[in-house]
Image (cartoon, rainbow, N blue to C red):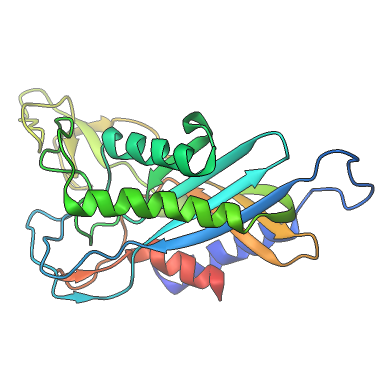
Amino acid sequence: MNREMCQRILLGLVVAAAAVVSAMGAEPAEHVFRAGAATSNITPPLDEPIVGNWGQPLARDVHDELHVRCLVLDDDMTQLAFVIVDNIGMPREVHDTAKRLIQDKTGIPTNHVMCACTHTHSSTSARGGSKTLPCESFSDYQKFVIRRMAEAVRRAVNNLEPARIGWDRGHEPNQVFDRRYFMKPGTPTPNPFGGTDRVVMNPGRVNHIIVNAAGPTEPEGRFLAVQSRDGRPVALLAFYALHYVGRVVCDRISAVYFGVFSDRVLD
């Protein structure tokens, strides 16, 4: 991610944080809105394979640490937890097991927990042995990530404090584009995970056998900002539908541009 893009995104974050819409007048007599945030380190050990590219080199160094980032919202009646994981992607079995552990440890119902991955291409996989089949058992790293997801939520609950919340949106169409295209009849359309597909992924923008893009892009970014009652930042949750961007040395663990984004927000 280049400096101009970072500055543009950060400007959007400042606007989002400044646009907090929670009223600061009379407080409800019965219910107080609270929020808490926490992170858990999930950097895998060295000498494990790094996935995300076509090869799987063993990790020899750590460019930057990987994390679970959690935000819990509480209005005295309902608690919601957002859990964002620095990993290329996890199967439903890992998510569901983590949600059950979160419910056991915090009382937050599983259907009140939203989990997502940042899709970094520079980490050990938490997907399991197969990209397409359900997990029958968990690897040591999957078990570690599940435990740390639950711990992040527990710590965020411990950090709950009276808060105010706001949200905003912005558009950045210059960073997103289609990756899948319909091709002229007769063009092979192999699926990287087996079988055939209806479209081709990354055929190259200048390709004479492209017919048209398979779908629209999503240029809108959405932001949710949470502050303490006195205006101190608690957390910022941002969504932008951009596939993996950036590259580090192939044998180094990294959160890539997601980590850069988080570091710039902290600055």
